[in-house]
Picture 1 (cartoon, helix red, strand yellow):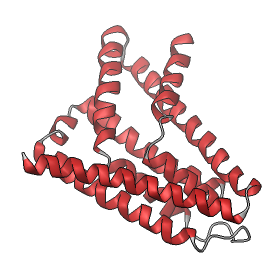
Picture 2: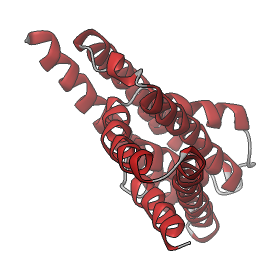
Picture 3: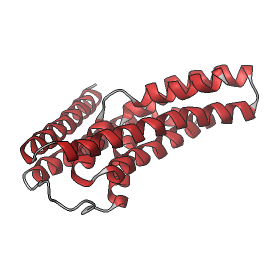
Picture 4: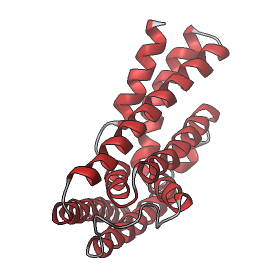
Length: 208
């Protein structure tokens, strides 16, 4: 049981560092409420499961090819910069009495999905972390235990997503319109910052 809990904690630790998805969850929670923020996290979590499967199957090595890395950095640059600019534009129209859910849950889900999918750091992250877990678990335990502990990691990620969604949506209830707009602007700038970083990494790869 202690091993299972340690893998849940690992999942929480993997999801906790502030990145594009957490910034987007904060933005969606302020504008649309709990479900919209949570669905951003769910979209990202689907990609986490996908990469875990790719690591297990060994396919992820293909994604480390220079061409694929460059493509993914550029894709990430486009997705994050576009989302950040959209957040900045939407901040000016944000009001406390704005109806929740003007944007569909499917769009929130896809936002999290593509943000995580287009982030090369996610690939390297899961390759390093889950690759190590896989190597250790596969040699020590059987396939059933591997599934169990992999599920524990995902459960940890899910718990963090729920926590972030709750925090983000709570801000909407306690802050005034001006502060909500400021947070939304900062969130948008954060996404653009990540996008520019991705674009810079693509430039470095193209220039070598």
